Length: 155
Image 1 (tube, rainbow, N blue to C red):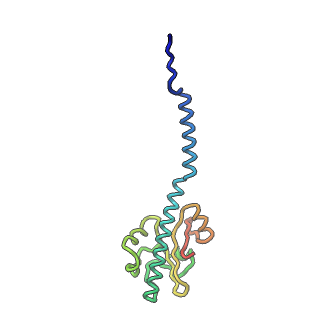
Image 2: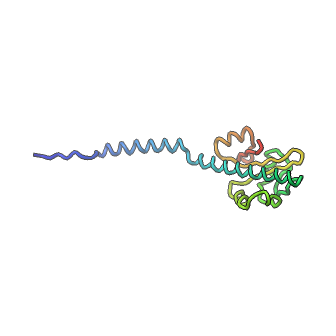
Image 3: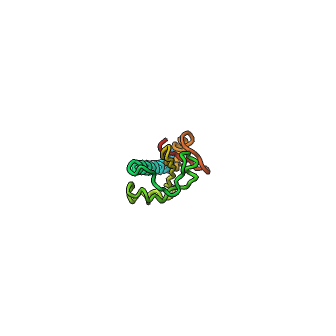
């Protein structure tokens, strides 16, 4: 009597399962879009840093009754003019208003902040955005300079 062993899967069944898994993995990766998620995280970090700088300037103005001296700040509240003034790296007057890590955080690549101070109208801090959602928002509320998009606070 022959003992037939039909245990296991055929090569065709294994290949079919692998193809289905590859298709599902491709769909999941395209839905999650890791690059967009990374860009959103960087945009959020830049937004938080912009808020921190804006609040530091406002505190300084409230206490000292004058605006701080900030290297590369614009004397305008227009987004394009603020960006043209270059990013802020030296804000010695604000050392008492921000922590030590802050100056290191805003000097990282892609983390630059741009500031405009107009004694009559106030302060505006701009930052670069890269996520699709924020680029669309920048087209409506911010500005575009040299193919980069920027949002400003307060909006």
